[in-house]
Image: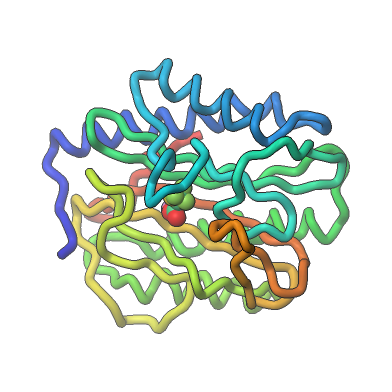
Length: 248
Ligand code: MF3
Ligand code: CO
C-alpha cells in the first residue's frame, strides 16, 4: 500500500528533509584527506541531534553506525571505522534523519582532493541520472518511467546500474512502498499520485553492475572493485512534478 501523506505529515517531512540536506551541507567542509569515517559519523550524529532529530540508520535492522559512509568501490551501507579518507577517494554519505516520527533520506557522493577523470565522470553522470529519473516524477506517471529513464541514461554513458538495491517510499517508516528500481519499462509499475513521497536513488558503477556483500554483512561492494557513486533525494509528488524535500 502506498501512503498518501496528509498536509501535517508533509510539513513534518519537509522539516526532516531539510535537516538531512543541512547535515550534508554541514559535513562538506570536513570531507578532507585525513579525517576518519568515524569522525564524520559522530559529526553527523551530533548535528542531527542538535536539530531535534535522530539518525534513522542507527540500529535500523541492527546497522551499527549513524549514517552510511561508503568509499570508492563500496556501493552502500559502509560502516564508519578508523579508516581515513585519502586524496583521490570518492565518498558517499547516505544520511537519514527522523523528525517527530517522519524520515528524510538523501545520499550524495563527494570527491576528496584531486580525483581521477574517470571518477569525475562517474560523479557527474550519476548525479545527472538522478535528475533524469526525477524528470519523470509527477502525478499520473508510473514507477517504471523513473527506472527506464535512469537506466537509459546510465547505459548511454556506459555505467553499470546496480539492480540489487532500489529506491523506496518514505514516511513514518524509512522504507515504505513502492520499491523504485533504477531500471524498468515505461508505463509499468505503480501509478504515482500527489501526496506520495519517494526516494529516488541511482547507484551507478564505473565497471560491472555486479555487486557482493562483505563479511561485515552490511557493506555492498562492486564485483570488479571499480568505483561506485550514489545520489539520492526524497521527493514529494505534486500535480505536475515534484518537490525536493532534502534540498541542499
Ligand atoms: N538510505 C539507506 C537506504 O535507503 C538507509 C540504509 S539503512 C541502514 O537503503 F541500516 F543501512 F543504515
Ligand atoms: Co534510501
